[in-house]
Image (tube, rainbow, N blue to C red; front, side):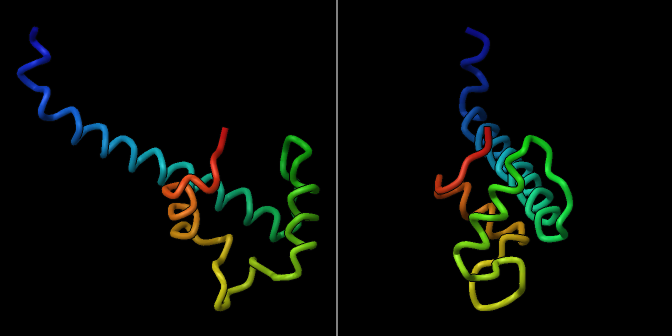
Length: 88
């Protein structure tokens, strides 16, 4: 019964927490893909496969250009908000 007093604040708190979660996930993606761009090892064995997939696409998403850049935080925030990508 006490939580009913503050129930109008729950949606605000949820939005703030969700926004922070998406920003943190975007930072993780940027770190992973910047390691791939530098040719560094990515743990879990998935790094080589991801680098091969990116190379097969023909476009270089690691360089600044007209296409979306895999190394920018804004790109990953957009992908996560649209539920195109997700991280386990």
